[in-house]
Image (tube, rainbow, N blue to C red; front, side, top):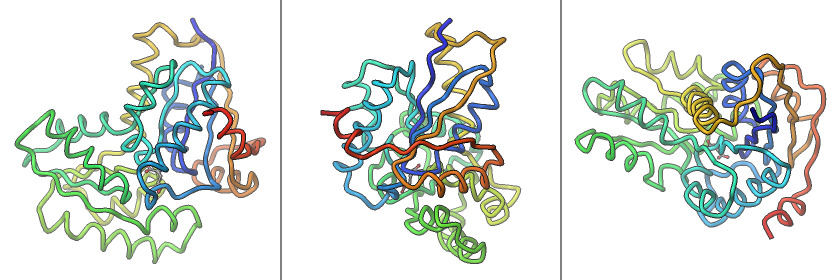
Length: 272
Ligand code: DGL
């Protein structure tokens, strides 16, 4: 038994969707959530920069004494996961492989769509992960640069709806029957995505698949907490704590008692 917390990070509030699924699956675990609100969005940034930010945050969480880190950000996973796993001692779970696996299992016509940030699409990591499992699957990926800023700023639904329709068009034209929502922010607009794609398309969300992987990893490594205990969560942001709290509570209907602010300098020092 190991009662140390699990660290979860994202560029902003998107990783809260992963935290939510982890809380449903693992209510006895403690969590530390760190959102890099001051530097969100990651999607348009160069790979090297996303890699540096991810390394800083993961090092900070490792120093805070976590037993496992979840990179709850597809852009960070695509840019930095192998390097983080090489450089840190704590186990790190990313958000890309579990969805690729779920999509390959779900598709009937072997045409899989991906909606993600520019960085994730440019990395080609989803196509790679899918082709490792099914070399004959067809992958159609669309970058959605407007979605994360619209979600983080709580833009009006009409704008979000119009953007999703536009980004979904090429996937529909190619006849995909399964779509990976390859950004942890996207479950926050789940009803829009479900309406636009309809009942006949299987949607694969990172959050659910990742929570399953976290639970399995804890069990197999023998580092799960005592099941009879009740876990707690600490929230950290590099952005404005009040804004983070309001966004988190609204999206997840999760009461957040307090949000601590982390200085970027402290993240930089952790990675130095
Ligand atoms: N939620 C993140 C992802 O999964 C971040 C997106 C962004 O910051 O652009 O990619």
